[in-house]
Length: 163
Image 1 (cartoon, helix red, strand yellow):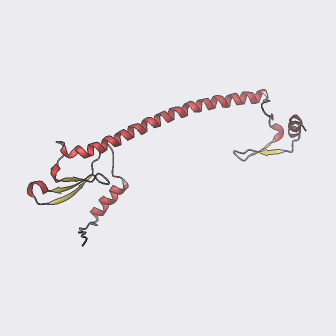
Image 2 (cartoon, rainbow, N blue to C red):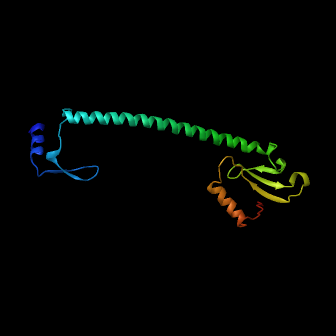
Image 3 (tube, rainbow, N blue to C red):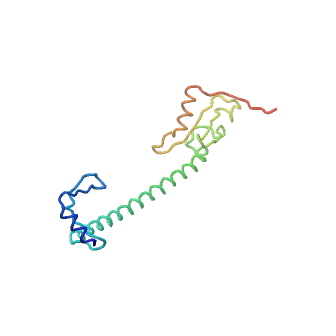
């Protein structure tokens, strides 16, 4: 049996139904415009042309979205890298309100531990945890956990000595 014969049978029997693979709805096969291979009907050719045009537009949109995403990622990476450099030099800047000689850098997960009075009085009056932020940046999850542990006084001193 040829393809044309199969198509003719499917379209002539009003009791045959198909199911849409996308939405699951059933439809009468007699109302469908069948074609085989590249032998499109004029209506099918029109629909394929519409799809191709739509795909071309989507491709253009996708390329633009990809370009913008790459641009955002580049800006974010640059921002993070600049931030990592700045956090290391901030204690040397005039705007830093603590004695830089009292600061010790950790940089991850927090930036500094400040031992107030260490350099000038050779006596530590207060210990401060400092994390530098710019713009609208906030603490990340690990930093929040450290802050919470300190606020709950879950901090202790330990001397580790191997004998």
